[in-house]
Image (cartoon, rainbow, N blue to C red; front, side, top):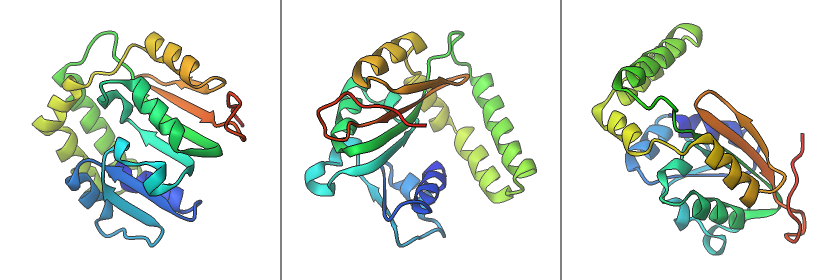
Length: 192
């Protein structure tokens, strides 16, 4: 679902897109009726993507995945190695809710987001798929298993690992943009 949305957005602007997920089911959903010649969907983990196998990337977009790694730092360091000089790392990840998670809240968000798709965007089938996925017991268990880190911890880590990054806080997420140095020796800057 989200793979397809972001991959298609990138495919409209890039020559080629590599979209990876460790779940075959998520890749199947992303490919469903939306094959594009410049998108390659592959079942692989983040650390299976390497410069030796895949070369470097002008842009990397990682949406809500870093919280699932035992070490955010290791995942970010790896992503940095995949960037071409001057490349852009853009990611958004969940932040631990100060009041904790509840099943009731997760169901509320699933219904709210699905209604938005159905009513505002007028796409009923994706809305129903979104609701089925996000109200499923496996998805709920996943949310409790990976609650995210506190915002202050994430900000300190991003400042240390991605000097000069632009960090934008959202309600329960943190978005980051960092541009790799052009010559791989500088600290990196952001562009607007």
